[in-house]
Amino acid sequence: MPEIAPVPLSQLTTLRVGGMPRRMIEAATTDELVAALRDVWDDGDRWLVVGGGSNLLFGDDEFDGTAVLVRTSGIERLPSPHPGRVRLKVQAGHNWDDLVAQTVAAGLSGIEAMSGIPGTTGAAPIQNVGAYGQEIVETLVEVELIDEATGEVSVVPASDLGLGLRTSVLKKHYGSVPERSAVILSVTLELTQVGHGEVPVRGAQLRSALGLEPDAAVSLAWIRETVLDIRSRKGMVLDEDDHDTWSAGSFFQNPIVSAQFAATLPPEAPRWSMAPEPEADRVIPLDRFDGFIPPRADGPAPVKISAAWLIEQAGMRKGFRLPGSRASLSTKHALALTNRGRATAEEVAALARLIQQRVQSEFGVLLQPEPVLFDVEL
Image (cartoon, rainbow, N blue to C red):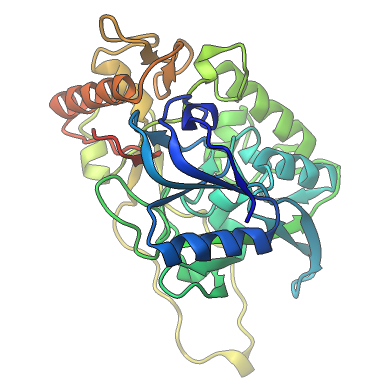
């Protein structure tokens, strides 16, 4: 068993808060990870899995349980049944942004807009990670996971994971337990071979973020470089010397509301329709036509609104902090709660509670946290 001397979780999380676990295991291979989890579950111990620690707010007190560090890595290229596509099986502990860089270098499209997101690949499906309108649900084929209830390893198709806006059946939402308690061992993605030339950019939100016209064509490398620049200017790319990046990224989800509710907001409030991209005309061969044509959705589509805009309009500007607190909003982006140096988890939580209260009072919207909260309350 690859057991190591415990260190405080503040050393392993990007928010740099968190107490000391009683026990710590570092798994460098899938076999070690499976064995460690089965051992912990057989003992009935409290447990926590840590990958990149970028989506975790852990409490200040000592953790009377086992922290399992996922340090597996590797990419296996597999054939796809679909022409022009490639499948990649990626180990759970593989650094996500390293994966994105490798796919762009190989001319594979599908995750380039998610450049710069910290964390590991195994964590990505848990909250259906996404950025600028691109989400992993669009490319995820399946995951290999181990279930706590049985200790069995199985391959689960993406369609069984309940993937939605920053959610899945595997995510421990604040105030609840996951629908399925399991740990991802590997992730299989299907990406499109587009090469290194210029290609059209799908998705209005991505085109808007990149400042592109609907008919614009750019290379994957250009998209990655531009996204990294945008995220860096917002303090969303990890930098040891920049306290604005000592965060869990976007702390609150952008709310999805009805079109009617969105219409009550000031016209300058940023918003994005959740209507799907218009479908191309479909031709169904007669020998395969069963007489059923799926109906088109009726009524106005839901609308995503900017949590950062709500926070600022509720009076909490970039850099806002409570008196005496070492936690504050980022000076670059109002959606990131940051550690300005030796902040506690409770200081971060106190700031989050105030933000929730103010936004709900001003706009009637209760912001939901994106990170997994462990032994800390909002």
